[in-house]
Length: 106
Image 1 (cartoon, rainbow, N blue to C red):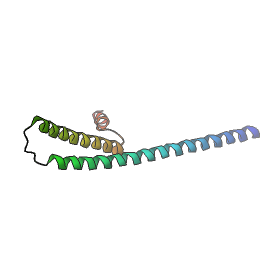
Image 2 (image 1 turned 180 degrees about the vertical axis):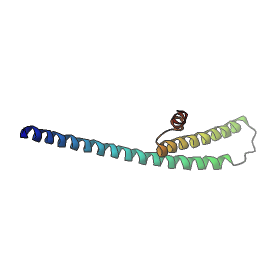
Image 3 (image 1 turned 90 degrees about the vertical axis):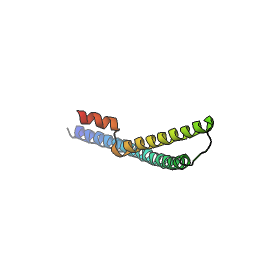
Image 4 (image 1 turned 30 degrees about the vertical axis):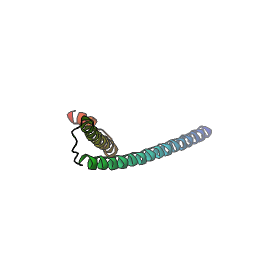
């Protein structure tokens, strides 16, 4: 009987050690992912600021190429802002707005 209890204790300790190792690896992965997301948000914010500055410069050409370029810059500005907001929303809330609205409906 004593040997069975000792064997169960050793197995329990081994499982706990393996769980701690797995949790440690998961924590490192989450930490690295969090750092990468923060770096991406900073890059997106600086890109958004530059695009915003360029989009406010008055252009006096009526050429279709220039107008198309300005429209592309404005679309890029909007998309950078949208991506940044989505990344921050997922990062801070852990859920997207769509998931939160579905939970609110339920």
